[in-house]
Amino acid sequence: MEKLVIIPTFNEKENIEKIIDAVFQLQLNYHILIIDDNSPDGTAEIIKTVMLNYPGQLFLEQRTGKLGLGTAYIYGFKWAIDKGYQYIFEMDADFSHNPVDLEGLYLACKNGADVAVGSRYIKGGAIANWPANRILLSKGASVYTRLITWMPVKDPTAGFVCYKKQVLEAINLDGIGFVGYAFQIEMKFAAWKLGFTIVEVPITFIDREFGASKMNKSIIKEGVLGVLKLRWQSIFKNYHKKVANSDYFSAVNFSQPDVALESK
Image (cartoon, rainbow, N blue to C red):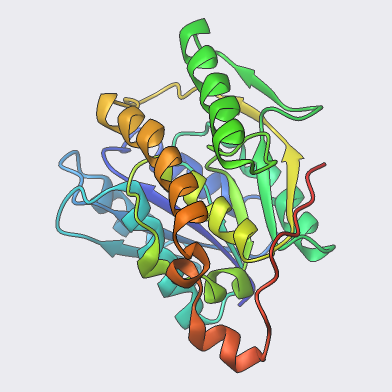
């Protein structure tokens, strides 16, 4: 087992079967784990039916309620590590991330990156069908994050990512503090602080056609305050100690490097 795509869901009945089929139609040996937060619209029931078409390739984990994007991914990361997957992907269910781009992220990690980010804000990246205010908010968040954290990732809020297994093993996943979109920033920040190589791969981000966006004021607030908190912790506290999995570093006899990041 090599490649696992993790897709969190909450009320994605219009999209879920289509996105599953689109990934498997690539015929590139991806497996999919859906983590559904007790969607009241019946998303999980649709997935259970579709699972009959993809035995041993499609998996479902159901949680008791809407517990947050970050906790869903943490759950999925731990599941993937336990099952032995080598390349673990984050992807949305709503086709804002094109499944065709999975292979570009995979090849970036296969060829030397530890983390590959599907980026809207590097050369070749783009956004389609978003209103101007959403584009302004997203670009502003990216600039703000880079200025505060000094992390040279041009799309730090991106949610289309491939991690090598070793990265997720090295991070103390229970030390990741955010549950909304700030989670995406902190995962990249933690990987960067632990010295892993991050490469950005250009993608075109397409606004969802079906279903409702999960963005709200509390998520934006968490992002604004969360970035400040990350910077404060990295200066005045031992952030490495918080997010480094000491068992992993002891096992590989590997000292934690300060910074090693590549952005293309």
